[in-house]
Length: 247
Image 1 (cartoon, helix red, strand yellow):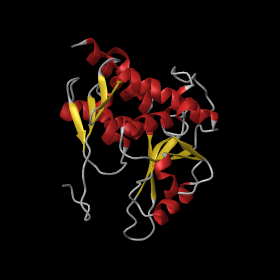
Image 2: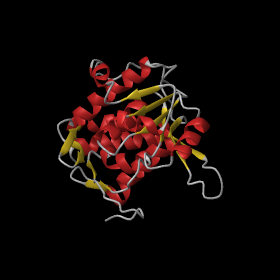
Image 3: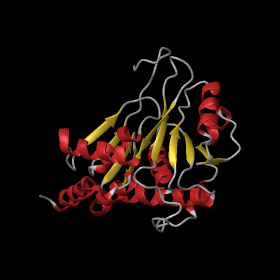
Image 4: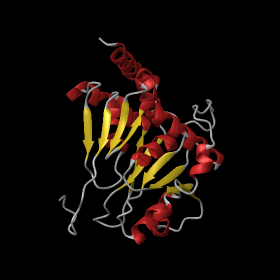
């Protein structure tokens, strides 16, 4: 078995013995020996594992400086791009959980979800800032200089601010077809169990590429399951017609 595969399976077996790895820890552990390999593809853009880790570490430090840590819920309202994956990981690294907010949703629904989740912070982009008026926001483009000035090294362990295996990784809202949308809390333990089971069955190799075609910000597992298996998570652009069908 290749060294990289041995390392991943060691992480999986450690988790199955109850060590309680967190989602971002599993990704970081799997990425150590493949830092120059592409982790994310989006059109002509590409991020290696080293770039993904460095950028997410910088953003995580920016989030911590804003008071974000364990127990906080951070809204994520961005267009699909490598920034989305970076922000997902950074929020988890900060100890918080993220709440995906689809820019395509009506403003009233976004406002309801944000208020219901009692978000500590909103991570978004200036082009989307008019969608949701939130008192505490971080704009990935306008705050880029401050983010880039942070260290790219991982945050130091902090027993107070770091998440634990049973803490939320993300909160995803239902469609609300039978009433108001309801937030479903998904803990790190559940995400890691899903990711490690995907690595086993159907199985993923280092050369595997997963193509994510969902039009909105969706569950972390859809974007990162291949990343955890040291694979390239390919994010495809998709054009939608007025009825929401792929074209």
